[in-house]
Length: 194
Image 1 (cartoon, rainbow, N blue to C red):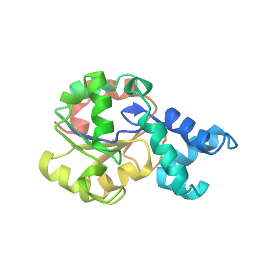
Image 2: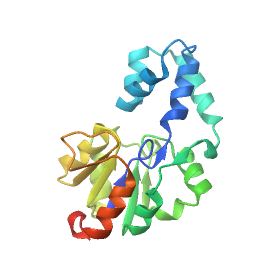
Image 3: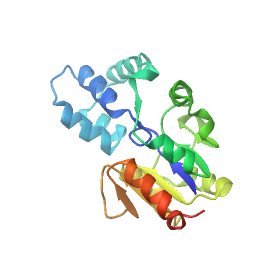
């Protein structure tokens, strides 16, 4: 099975750290649960919703750059899925340096055939251009993300889709944790492709 992964909130539990950063920049005046919910829609949505200024955006970027890779934890059982897959690729809005520093910290950089980041110039999700590019190169079977916008391009290409921790009827599969996904991969590999 060839899998296209989202990065933030799918491979790694990055949203708690980002929530704290945005909350700090907002002066701690907004409930962190609300900030988290806005970020889970999209970072662009949170920027617009909170009307973040250029100065606040620079502060967010500064605080994010101060995070160490160890501040970002992988989700449990993800590595097992990476090992079971035939190919793994990433499509993320995160910059390449940030992605690689985390992957290398955990020794996961060799699991991925290709990584498309914000540095590659593709339009932002849910535009399908980066997904088309990766599908043509790697014959993808499945797209995994934690937000609707992560899987919409895969659906447009006719690929199976999986939403992690945020069930939605548009996804082919919905999972709350990766342990159940490992089970499915081990027992029904043909469901997802080769």
